Image 1 (cartoon, helix red, strand yellow):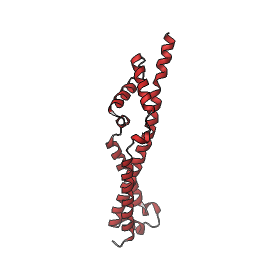
Image 2: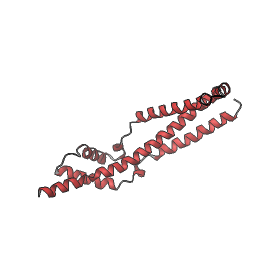
Image 3: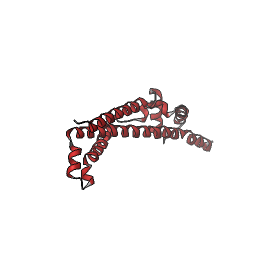
Image 4: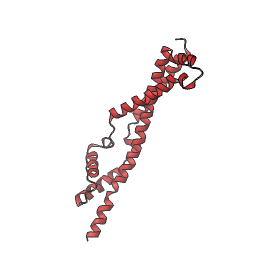
Length: 168
């Protein structure tokens, strides 16, 4: 009887695989949001540099040395990546916040006690697994954030192109 119970207990902790499936999708989503943030910030910084004439200045005076000639673009990419990273840290993404309150609490408890082998944990793990299997990661992610950032990127790119080709 002891072996049978151990096999049951070990088999019920498959919810972690489902949790990792959702976590992988969430990480890809967060990476996409970070990349869009970086692009928007970088292009906005470069547009400000265009307004003050810094790219034209560096291209004229350092035309023989490409890294210095394109230093405003390089700086804007580095600054955009740094600021996007700060925004990501400030957002403090949490996978469990994507679930409804009940599932979030159950999943946190099951994950925190994943090394405990008891009948109650087995039942909790089975319940969490059953509910996580039914979740489609693309349905619980906030795609509105991506659409807003993509639209903002298009607007900022348009403004930058306008500034670049105008005689401001």
